Image 1: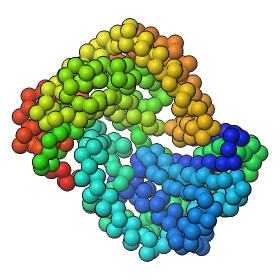
Image 2: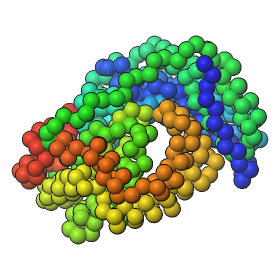
Image 3: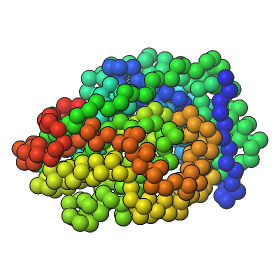
Image 4: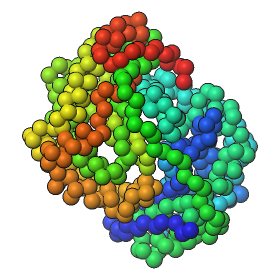
Length: 426
């Protein structure tokens, strides 16, 4: 199989961006080995082509370029940016990371010591902590419910040979999506792709992980992540929704914007403007290859957290039953048609969106076509999509707060039975 290649030329500056997406990502971590793809990707970047980490970084610094590896739910991505005059050298360095990573035992042990520190930092930051717990609790058993970082139990199991084998299995030509943008033409971009691929195996790609989950189980529930001495509650509410690219995606993009994606959206008006409970409140359909969360969020003082949850659930039930009003729909539609093109304004943005669409298994130009699709929708389209996908009776609420001061009010919010867990239990 040949990789998919996306090119976005631009002569605005003597810069070239390269993005190589390796299908798989954290959703493909074996159970009990959460964090494996992150470990393998970061380790591959820590020295390659016979250079140790310090030498590799020194070469990049002298070229004024950068190469980074990031791990998401659906892919591991190598990203680079360089001046045009140094393009050939940077392409070779990228090819080394893909085909000849060092997987240095010293770096492996260093990374195993560093990652628990990242986990501690997440536990210290309430906003990151509530996201970590919400991902786990929203749809237990779903591939996206598992952490990309790893857990205290899984991190010690991430052995060097497992990381090396994961990289070798997934970094094959047919499993890559390559994007090139900037000061390069189509022929030049294809030469870059050929150089990135020339040392890689041509074998078949691995079977992608299953990322579609069952419909949400009826019944609300609330998970209270108990953290001492909190004056504020970080709140996440939601349930499993459709995949990005489902036929209802344009209508749900309109719904998420009108309900919680602008200052004038309903959640912002109810939570911030009318009641002053939170600086901000919003909602979003997570973008991924498989079904992912419909999620709402806010941060309130602990003494109003229960009221904020109750109000949010009431408003969500209303939008599920009736959709957006004609006025809300028109305002959200106007906002999206005007603002979405800003996310496609540069060659780099267009390339990255094309690569993302390919990883998600969508037709070329899918995201670029959304403004035109949204422009054709009305309140009836939103109401029908809401009826198909919004499940107010199945909302999972996660709150990071102090149980002693928040449990009673949250228990009275109508969010279902309360389960209290220690903040550092996951």
